[in-house]
Amino acid sequence: MLRIGLLTSGGDCQALNATMRAIVKTIIYQSKEPVEIYGFLDGYQGLIYGRYKQMTWADFSGTLTQGGTILGTSRTPFKRIDIPEEDGVEKVPAMKQTYRKLHLDCLFMLGGNGSTKTANRLREEGLNIIALPKTIDNDTWGTDMTFGFPSAIDVATTYIDEIKTTASSHGRVFVIEIMGHKVGWIPLYAGVAGGADVILLPEIPYEMDNVIEAIERRDKSGGRFAIVAVAEGAISKQEAELPKKEYKKLVAKRKYSVAYEIADEIAKRTGREVRVGIPGHTQRGGAPDAQDRIFATQCGVEAAKACLNGKFGVMVAKVQDKMTLVPLKDVAGKLKYVDPKSDLVKEARYLGISFGDE
Ligand code: F6P
Image (cartoon, rainbow, N blue to C red; front, side, top):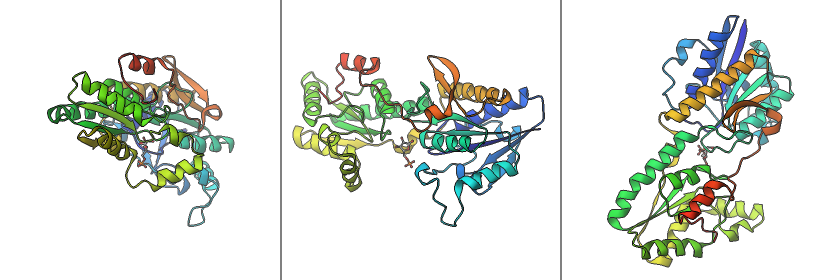
């Protein structure tokens, strides 16, 4: 008997079910032994409290196109992993106990950075873990791509497209806030795909003077409207120079998100009519797009193969267009940032997109 567990952890995304479907399908088709499948509910919480359901192939049928996660998810911050739950339950021993009680051979963990840290901790504790790189943010170290990212770019791009028609009619400047607190992959890709005039990323601190100049340049060249794509974590040069603690305090004090501050400043300094648009969690919602379904399927198949071959303590990854396995201990919790010198940033600059830094 081969006994596997599945859990989805952290912020959800569109291709979680598609990934689990591929794991389960591959394991069932390829395993020489009968398979028992346990789905843990609401992420690590299910593993901690032994909340799970036994599942069959039928539970995953039809889920290729279904967004969200049929298991539910939650955030279990790694920094609190050794702090008992409010009811006194100690998380790591409890998770080990559930795993052992069910005689699991492998636990598949679909999660992003924080979740891989916990997975790595469980690996250190002797559990057989295979991680799969989930996040719309595309910020997982060790893989060129994460599932959820392609669909999120599509949502954010469509949002920009749709704003453009109304922005054009009214001759307005739109500041569009796109997900990404620490990294700016979605705003960069959606900004380029949506034809933004200015893209502000956490990795490239901006100067307001440069943003204003870019908007005025567009105005002078005959553009009736302007689109400023702003990451949730866009940061000015002055803010970037603050000690981390000070910056965190400043962010915590904000009544509204950064997009509103930037919009106010643009309105004040240009006299233009400015509006803010925030696609928010729709970027994680809906069905996975075709590219996501394919990548999710690849991840699921590779993870299942790793399990059948007894390769544990790894994360499935795509590196230079090849699927591979990377040691969990090398990638856990590391962030993959946008390189300000990357080709896409340079290409965007060539066509006149401003990143507000020069
Ligand atoms: O990590 C995914 C993500 O959607 C980020 O892009 C975003 O900053 C954050 O989660 C939002 O978190 P929550 O769903 O807890 O509001």
